[in-house]
Structure formats: C-alpha cells, structure tokens
Image 1 (cartoon, rainbow, N blue to C red):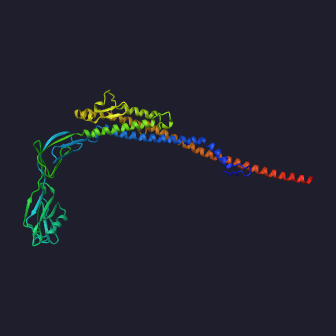
Image 2: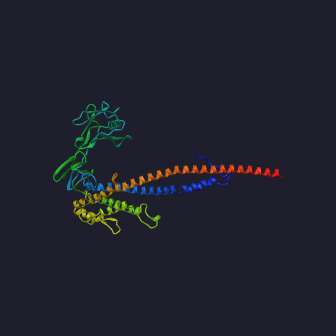
Length: 447
C-alpha cells in the first residue's frame, strides 16, 4: 500500500522533488525500452507495407502469367470492321479470324398506317368501343378503349403493352380542328412481328391500312446467308457478334485478332509495379553514416535478397534475353519496357512472346514466384520478418509493463523511507526541545 511522504516538515527538504528525481533515474532503463519500442513499431509498419505490396505484385504477376485463352489478359481479342455501319464485338471464346460480310437487308418492324384522318375526340371503333389485336398463331387480344375515340384507341393500345405501340400523326386541320391518322408499329423487328388491328366485329378500322411488313435482317458471309429477327447477329461465328446500323448497306471486312495493346498495357503495369517495389525496398534499406538519414530498415538482408531476386527475374533460365520483347534492366537497376518493340515482336510471333511472359517459367511467373516466396502468409520471408518484429514488440510491451510495476513499488518504498525520516527527525526535534527546556530550567534553579 502506498504511503504519503511528509514534505520536509521536519527536515525542510523538498522530498516530493527528490523522489521525482530519483524516480526519473530509476526509469531510465524503461525509457530506453520505450525508445526501442517506437523504433520497432516503425520498422514493423514498414515491413507490413512492403509485404502488402509484394502480395499485390504476386497477384498481378500471377494474372499475367496465366496461359488461359478464355479469361485474363491473354484471352483478349480485338474485333474491327471496315464499315462504320457494321459493328463487331468478340468474346474470349472467339478465335482469330478474318472474313467479309455483305449486308442483304436490315431488320424492320411491322407497321400499319391507317387511311382515314379524324379529330382526337371522334369515335372511330364502329358499333363497339373495343379493338382486336391479331397475330398469326396466337389468340386474338381484345383491347378496351373506353369511349372508342381516336385518342382513346391510341392510349389503350399503348397501355396494354402487348408488343405494339400507337402514335397519332397530325396531317392537317378541318374547320379549325386538327386531324390525325393512326400509326401502329410492332415493338420488335423481323418477319414474326406481323399483326392486324380491327374493330371488335372484325371489320377494318379507319378505312383500312397501308402495310409496311416486318422483315428479318440478312447478311452473307462467303456465300452463306444468315438471318436475324433483329439487326444483331449473335455468335454468327463462335464468339463473334455483328450489329447492323439501321441504314447499313454494302460490305465490311471483319478482322478478329489478338489484342496486342491490352497485353502491352498489362506488361507495362507489371514492370511499373516491379520498379515501384524495387524503389520502395531501396529507400527502406538505404545505408547512411548519419543514422537520421538512413532507411528505416537500413541494411536489412531479407529485403535486399527480395530486391535482388526481383531484378534477376528478368533473365530466363535458358540464358536467353527479354530484350527482344522490349524488356531490359538499365545500368541503374531499373526495368525498362519498350512498347513499340513489344508490339513489333508480338506481330511477328505472338506465340513466342506469350511463352516468354506466361507460364511457370515465363517472366511473369518468375516474378510471381519471388513475390509469393516473400509474402506467403505462412512461409514468406518478409512475413516471417513481420512476425518476428511483432513478437519483439510484444516482449517489449511486457517488459515496459513489468517496469511500471517495479517503478510503482520503488516509488512506494522511497515515500515510506522519506516519511520515516521525517517522522524520526520530528521525534528527535521534540526530544531536543524537551532537553533544551530541562537544561534551561536547571540553569535557572542553580542560580
């Protein structure tokens, strides 16, 4: 139990200050531990940041190392068309190819333009107020128009939402009243979009119709005709979709090629990531005679080994060079990438370029192996360093806590000692005063 010292009541000493100064001396070892703890925490943070970047680099390199032709960087295809009215797209399931497409016709919707013009409020449905929508192979659909006026007919057709839409087209004015004709069109295109619209009794509406029949789109590829109910031809060849503009005519040269630009961009990104990693490690491990200017992890052999391995990953095990593909290491230890040289090499021999980058033994695969070896959650060298620093910090925290207890006990001990001193001096002063009074009394009595 802590005791309170009597602050110099008997001795005149500033015991509180003396105790604080003594405790400051006692706490010097703990202060050194706290300084060491702060240093270790800074180092741990740097290790963790570098380890996270290495893990990210491993993932990026792994994606680029994949040889999949259906997913990932190396599956990307580029589709082009020489006719702006004919567009083309290619999925990863397509194969590089080239062919010519000749447009036969574009797809049209089925359209009925009714002959008679009326005011919006005129009743146009005959004896009843319903109209009937008829399609081949389907049951007739009766649409209620409320009062049977021209405007109500158009509104009811659109509200029914049964694959046709109605529009009123103003064609003039009679006696100051606007006159309209009814235009009804299928929402879909193709031969199968045909329909009829009659009065409830089957008679013609509004004097009959002018019909623009719906039709399928058609194209010809190498003498083979393909048709589609829409202007889009999906998987006209495996993985290739062709779409015609509404006014498309003539021919178009279609080319489906490997997308060199996507591959080049992926290699550029990985090279930049590697350079960023090398620079970060160099900064963290930099040596300087002035400790204040040295890196946080100055001279760390684990990180220097990772840096060396990343730099040498550029060299294939068979002794060849990636310089042919635009990848080199400059005299400063930085990777460079020449996109033009890569593009030229890819155009000349795409399979060779792909093999040099992908697979376990390719450039990306070697980089992935280095990054994973360093950052693996269980066996990674940098991960182990992180774990080591974490354990060291835990030990330091325990030591600092132990010192807290030790210092608390020491302060209690000092307070007791000074309290005992003050008590003893107070007692001695009381005795001294008593003796002095006794001596004084004796002196007076002897006189």
